[in-house]
Image (cartoon, rainbow, N blue to C red; front, side, top):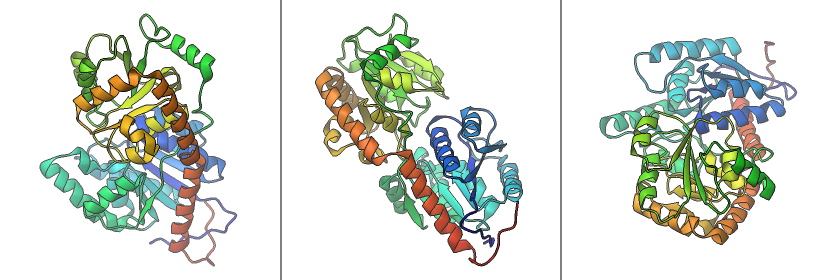
Length: 391
């Protein structure tokens, strides 16, 4: 491993290698680097140049550089690994933090243990695959773990899934965090203003329940299950809005019941959360989804599928009302019917959800734990007496 040292007064340089430039991973990275800038670190974000991540990380104060990587492994992998190697040489980071499967693959192949390396899966890739592809993904994760000084999971259940897959590595669990200054209750006036501002044909009248699903339109997020459930749920004139874009947009629009709105991608989901009576995320797999935490921080109740991170997100008393099996439209329809027809229950769930999020999922706490992890790894990788070369 490369020997680097720094005095306590010097700032750590962290290279975040990221492939997803939208959705939850991008928001997690943006919030994390913003907190790291405030804490005096020097974060560098290497990611594909198109999409909200590059702009968001730059606005947060990080140095942003282009890493033109695609989501899936393939013939471009060699070039992506070579580019990652050049970025490591150029920025000489104290820590490389690789986010998601593709960055974890390319980053660990590029560094191979020469710099302290954190791999954060943001949900395991093998959970998204079947058959031979899933077996190959598990085999890679077992092999690549040798170049992970730490695998950082966002939930105990995500960590457990890795262990059950036979991945042997030093593990840490640090929950996702939410910027509690940005995500907070809007109050009655703010809620009314949010509902009035939404691009919903005919608006959302007072007293009409609004369910919102925020997430990439993809098989992972399970919007197809939600649409099947919505057809059979007894929710009267309630409205459903899907906020996000992705590869299944066309298919979902073709299969959607009348009245379902596709809002497209949003750079700021807060108006949708403030306007919503219920946030629904029927994912097939996760690590710990961010959108429900953002909604809970605003006092909006959530309805989730029982995938990694969901039980750890919810207050224990919410499990009977707010958690259903994945890929089960009948159970989801029953829960939608119960929640959208009971405003008193929703109000109580929103209050307790807000309290839990603000006590457990503060981004400042998350960023502090990640910084402690970096300092631990850097301290293990270098002698304390050697002076750091100026960059």
